[in-house]
Length: 355
Image 1 (cartoon, one colour):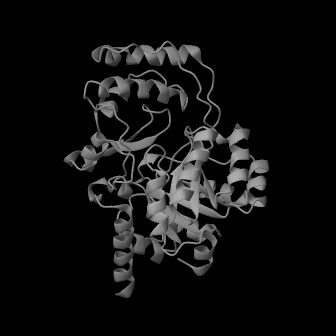
Image 2: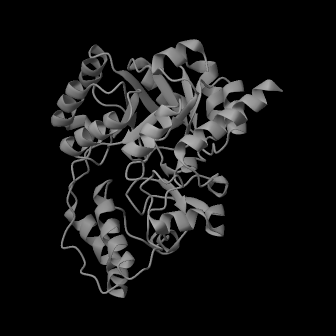
């Protein structure tokens, strides 16, 4: 990692813990930051009040820089007939778990782009770093954040997205490869997806993009981090690697799946949330995402129905409908405290670089 990028993020190690909304906690982020990496909080599905509380909880545990992440998706379309068709499609599974099918689906209003209350909260709290997923907010918002001295990062899955990020005045681009777990950061989910690997995407961006690049996707150990650094990345972002840490909010079922042979098989599907995301294969992939399914409601409206189904199934100790997001490196996850994992990663990086 170059001195310039180190200084920009104010971190000692080229290790970024992925935001992972719903799984990353203030305790996890603080442990990573205190160990020399960059801790992150995924606040894309949080209210401004909940987001502020999470930032305060982090501040009580660490005085190191914090990255907070938000979703910049388009507002979902109002399509009652399509949404109702999806609910009717899900009815047999709700019936299996003797659960009430939701009457309708609504937009939970989670896009950062139009959330003025969230913008104001950020300007009041001034986290050191703000990052974006699914695209970029309007330029006026970016200018307000930059004027407050906040470092900005954004995810790209292609060279064209990286160019948009660079033109917008963002400071750092996160190159998310096809191997990555969780939601794919593609700007337009209906556009052609080149499905570039992390290495291929990193090489393209290094050739055509002037911004510092954080490599993300399938990175589970220090040896792979070192490879990304040697290829020109300034740091690596790891998500799945931190899920088994005791500080994460992963459920027992999530941890069990990640610790099982099932972790060898991950797959992208949009049928869970309405946008493509990679997780551990289960019934939710095999049965919901079939060629005959009806069109999906928009993200995050679609997610409401799946979460209701997940809750109904889990009440009967059935976890095959859980959103167990994980990347292709899932079998390499190591259950250890976050600080210990960061130290282990740093030692592995140093060992490679010393050769």
